[in-house]
Length: 388
Image 1 (cartoon, rainbow, N blue to C red):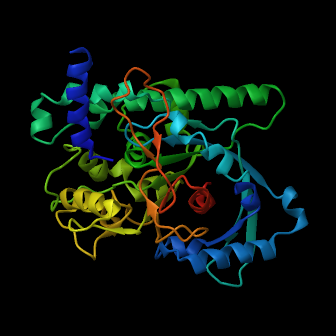
Image 2: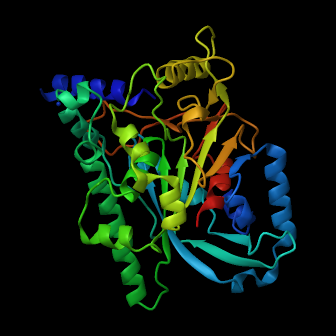
Image 3: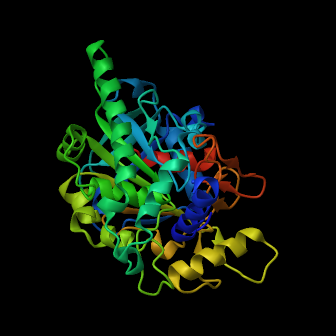
């Protein structure tokens, strides 16, 4: 739960020391989205009452003919948070609904005809980007460079190992999809990128072409505008403000934010990728407190934003001020878990960067007695509504 740069230095030190190294109940939820609202305000603040009303409306409008709805089969590629590994997200596949039914208003008028389509989530094809903790050591090769000191690191050079793993995950999804198709099953209609924390802006960078990849996989995914159907980011910093006390990504996030191909307008309007940025507003930062969550929040918000007070809220690591892309990307703020009423923290695990002897072992699971996370069932059910 440390910053990008602090963890990086920790990894370098450890390297030197070590070796000189319920969710099926929501499977029929229907979401109504007016297209006109994507052209104006896309900011939503979901209170528990609002979400409950949405769920109640969905239950009231679901009919027995839903199985005959036009269906799109979508696989998920999850880009993990820093130092997290695939096993850290193993419970997610049990929590995700098997499908969602999306109701869209065709025109601006509230009385206009609507179309309903079903998004079937293919969990067999869905994958977590196959990273191990040792992969994160590779970022240390940039530490002694002038670019690191000047905060002008280049994304394609610094994160090439993450991009390679993204393509490994994509290749597996596409290969398995083709096998299913060869066996008479319906082919895959789309891929939804879900990015947790740093994984959100790395996914955004990849979709914007900053990997500079020329592989067959990249050509299929990046040049076929129908292949990537959506991007959902969870607790992802999308902005590197001038007020920050230190640029913790040493120029990486700034390059992503300033690249037009990575912008919301390009991804959504030109390429047709449905983009949703979600962040919790559960925690204010406070250095004078016995609450460890508030202290950690203050320790993160201050260097990231240059300030911390009662008005600065976020998920305990990423403040709301930095968590959203510009319109027409969708903006979702969750003040609490809709099913439990508990605050939502940034992470569901405590990453274990010291565990180099078993680099794919699951991280330490955080207790959810007082707070939950983006991977908790009630919260998953909310962001899953935006899978397209």
